[in-house]
Every structure is written in structure tokens, then in C-alpha cells.
Image (cartoon, rainbow, N blue to C red; front, side, top):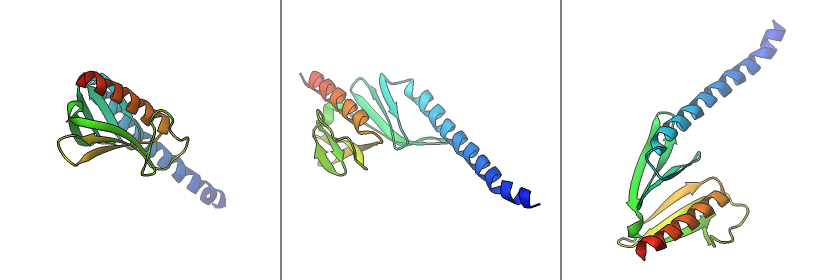
Length: 140
């Protein structure tokens, strides 16, 4: 009986890890299906992002699907900025570390901006550079 009590926490941890893996798999599968409609897309634990022509769509992944989807046009974007820990950083030479990473799209017709969270600084910087180049091509 003592051995059973020692193994019980390990069994509970195993089932919890299996459940967590199942939840993450469902998120990734929902993203995979959603991402097929875009030219370029990204997934991480904070947000999904997709680009189709001039339109950017982003939202939050859950096991039941993507929620809080928002779409805006790159034509309406005045500037794209990379924020690390709430501070503006250069897209060409981003810092190596940071806790809060966001790509901010400043819209021209309003005072609002759209902030898309990222988990990795290099990924956010690459998206920022790509979309900035795309934005200059659209406005030319």
C-alpha cells in the first residue's frame, strides 16, 4: 500500500501531462486548418497571425479554436514598431532578451494601434521587417 501511495502522484502527473499535450495538439490543429487560407502565418502560445494580400488577421489560440479574431488592412497602417518590455526597439538590431514582446501596428485613420504578442524577439523582428517591406511596396 505504501508503494501505491508513492506512485499515485506520478500517475496523476502523467495523466495531467497527457491532457495538456492533447489540449496543445487541438490548438495546433485548429491553427493548421485556419492558416491554410493565408499566404503567410505564424502560431505561438500567445497569438496567431495571418497575412493574405493586404489584410492581417490575428487572434488567440484555444483548444476549441481561435478566438478574438481581428482583421485590419496594411493600407491603413502608418507604422510598424517592435516593443520589448513596453519600449520601442530597432527592428534591425533587436535585443536578445525580453519578457513582453509585441509587434505594434499604428493605424493612420485612428489614434488606436493593434498590438500582437509574440514569444520570441527574432520571430517578431522578422515579421516586422517583412511586413514593413510589404507595406512600402503597397504604398508605392
